[in-house]
Length: 138
Image (cartoon, rainbow, N blue to C red; front, side):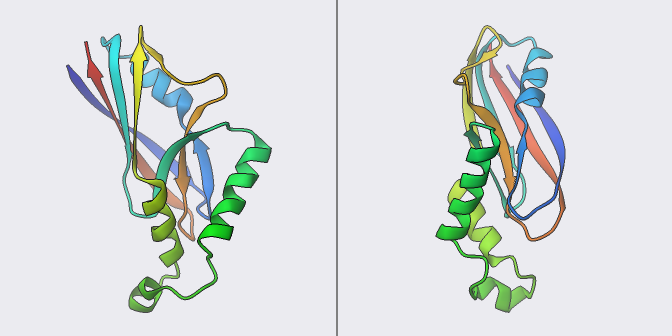
């Protein structure tokens, strides 16, 4: 069986990290599927999805890592073409990735104790985002 749902989000952009774990758990609980996988996909080319320990220190470290690795304040060809100043956002999102697969058993996601599912919006402005949640299994 396959069930597809969506999560709608409002982000602040600029590396905003949004914990969607409670919503994914809620949507899984509403299905009749007890064993399988949840596939998550964030739509848009300037956001990504991953897991992280959702605590202030690590969130700050994560944001700092992106600035050290993919600078926002250098020239990007994308910015020259479109003039929107978010070339760094596209590069960061493509490196992080747009999808994530999590197994579950007895309707319980196989997440570690301190592991949460997060959407990261790298765009240079606030955005409305959608994440697709696809639950597959028996």
